[in-house]
Length: 239
Image (cartoon, rainbow, N blue to C red; front, side, top):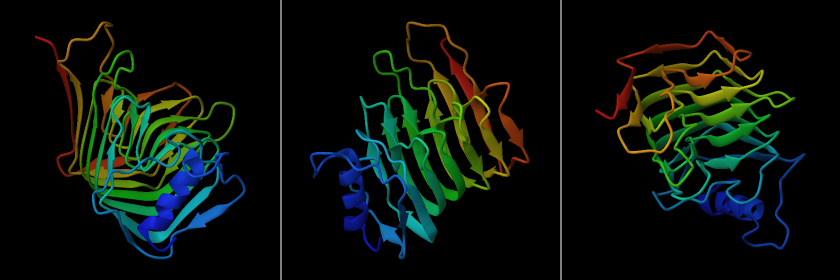
């Protein structure tokens, strides 16, 4: 992948936009060979309506200017649904991601997904309640991470200068981690994570806001994760 149009082609293939049968890219590796600027144009996540199951290797390159507006959709991010995929060696600069449920800069829904050596610098991630999708599972690297009988991890990733806001289950690295997934060796700095529960909602739920992980299952491996530089979590509630 050398330019934005080629990355859009990948999204179209996965989402079935330009072909009768969507392509999962299972068994394939897609590699960036140049930095890409998306110029703030509205991005449809890779795996918005289909699923990406391949390997995406950023190869040390950068994607800048990601803008996702997926209100009413279940997954918002550069990648949406990525079961059994690998995403690695990628930096995303100056991203804005808006949704109503699972949301992240890198992968919104990461079931049996391996995410490693991915970096976010400068991001706004905002998920607000919409119908019964109660704006949870929101983070900078992964919104929802689950092993689900397989292997899932977020390793050696960094987040800097991010503002991440959701109704609940919101974290600086991962919003919610389930099963025997692993969140290890990650770092976040100068970021704000907010569980904004000031909006009226029909169910009484805990905020679950964290610098690294918002909510995690007891079997999750959470090790060697650090934070610095006024990285704060806030849980706002109705008065």
